[in-house]
Structure formats: C-alpha cells, structure tokens
Amino acid sequence: MSDHLLGTPRTGGLIDVVSASVGAGHLAAARAIAAQFEEHGYPTRLWDILDLMPGSLGQLIRTTYVRQVQIAPSTYRWMLRSQAGTLDWLMHQALRPVYRRVLQMAAAHPLAMISTHPLGSQALGELRARGLIDVPVATYLTDMSVHPTWVHLSVDLHLALHELAAEDARRAGARHIEVVRPAVRDCVTEVRSLPRSTVAARQALGLPHHGRLILVTGGSEGLGDLDRSAHEIATSRAGTPVVLCGRNRRLLRQFTANRSVIALSWIDDVPLLLTAADCVVQNAGGMMSLEALAAGVPVVTYRCIAGHGETNASVLDRAGLVPWIRSYAQLGEGISKAIAPTGRPDPWSTTLAIRPSIVQAVLSPPLCQSA
Image (tube, rainbow, N blue to C red; front, side, top):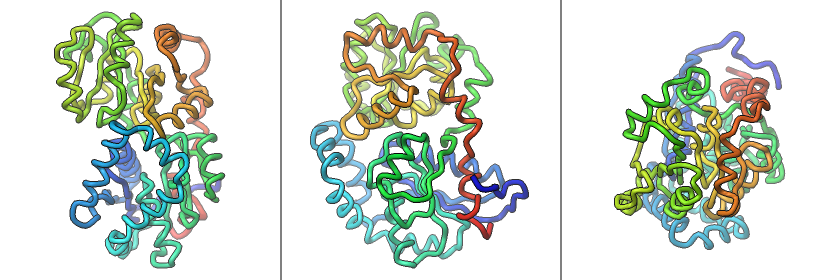
C-alpha cells in the first residue's frame, strides 16, 4: 500500500458516505465509516440513497426486497445468479431520478465519496464515468461475496473485507482494490479486549444467567427460517436459542407461546447481546456476523437465506472464518465445536493488524492526492 496521509493528517476535508436502508447492515457500515473519519478530524455527511428517490420509490424498493427474500426466495436466488444484466438495468432506471440530487451533494466539493450499497456505488460510478463529478469515489463492499452489481468500472477504489472478496471484485471488473479492516464500531471490538460480565449482560437483557445461549439472527428484518432454526437448535440440545426478531413483529408474536425459545425484538446494544451469547447462528453473512467475529464470539451459518446469504456463507466457510452447517444432523456438534476453544490463533484477528483501516485506504495516494 502507498504511504498514507495520516502521518500528517489534514482536517476539514468533507467526506460523504452514501448508503441505503435495505436492512440495517449497510447503514451500520456507513455509520462506522463516518465515525472513523470523524475521529481523524474529517467532517462527514451520511446519505440514504433511497430517501433521495422521488415519491414512494425508495420505500417500494425496501418492501420488495424483504417480501421477495421472505416469500419467494427462489426468485431472489434466480435473479442474483442469472439476471445480473437485467438487475443492473433495473438499478440504473431506478437511479435516474437520483442523479440530480447526487450532483448537488458533489457540489460541496467533498474530499471523497464512499458508498456502502450497490445502488450508491452505481450512481456515483455512473456520474464519475460521465465526467459530471470529479470527486474520488470509493465502494466499501459490505459482503464477503461480491455480486457484479457491486462493481462499477469508474469507481476509483473498491474496499474488500477479505482476499476472496477482492478476487470476486476483480473478476467483476474492479481495478484498484484494497483489503481493509472491516467497518465495525469500536464498542463492538471492545467486547474482545474489555470483557464485561456475562451474567450482568444476561440480567440486563432478561435472559437466563446460566447455560449456553445461542443468538439466532436473520438481520434487522428477521429474514429466513428463524423459527425452524430455533426449534432445531433447541431439540439438538446445543443450547437455548435466543431469536433476534428485529423489526419482524410477526415472528416475535409467533414465539410468545414457545417456552423453549427466547425471542427479542429490536436491540440497539449489540455489544451487550454479544457479551451475553455463547455463539451466534446467522443466515446471511451480514453485519452481525462481522460484529460477532470482531467481538471474538463464535459464529456459524445455518439455514442461510437464498441468494447473497448462500454466497456469503460459502466464502466465509472457505476463508475459515464461519463454518457453514448444512444439515440438522451436524447442528449440535457444529455449534459445540465452534464454541470449544481450539488453542489456535483466531484467523480473523490475526490478519487485521496487517490491513489498513478504511480511512488509511481512502486517504492514500492515488485516490486523494490532494488531501
């Protein structure tokens, strides 16, 4: 990596971070990135590209994603696997009304513009390609697997979570790629370095003080077969499942009569959750899996959602970071194996020290030579 500019940091350069509220993970990454720049003296602005869309178009995109993944997952898988060209065309049609607003953002002459969602990446890349903005543009790839719609040839820098994600991005046409430390909040990372009391965390959340607690998550929308996963975890005797229902009120109501499962609605204090847990069972490879890894909490994948959940699960497994449990017969043993100490170095934490931060990567030449 080129010598970064933080040796003699210059404050005052505005950073725009563009995301989309499709689930909570992309926005969480955007907020973490903004916080990192703010800590180094760079003011930031955070934009939700769906809010820039006219009328109810942004809300329609949010709703369509959730309903398709939950009600017709096979169509979502088919669309991502074989319809990349069609999906790219649809994205650009949806983005046409947004270009004017993005140009207004760029008129403030930010030091750089960073996207944490494919919609933002495509909008910024297209305007960069047309020569309408001369601001350096970076994409932070929130997923371990990189769908072609993440990549735009005119985006100056793609930031990847792992070498395998970087390979995906390169195959999709990305040129300048940097593997960086993930956009995870400091308070989550501190769970590993500043241990809190597990009993106190469980007490604060109203959870049992003793026994294994297995957090079951399907993201902020509670997507996937979480009810089935929870039932199978309980019957496998791997531990007591604690289902994070997020915004999914239907799922929360469904669990009220099930005494073998504990259900929680939206919880803001993720470090508290991770302190209380013995293991996280996830199904999408999203922000919760990255936060659990950063906190040093064991993570496994089970009953992953169609499409990007499956591709993320595959890459996380191949990277040796999160094992993918593919059947009920393997579930109890798989969770127990993940929890058991191995004595080997943690592959996630050992590689982070040698990677640049997102701030370092973005402010390095040649992206921000004028910083």
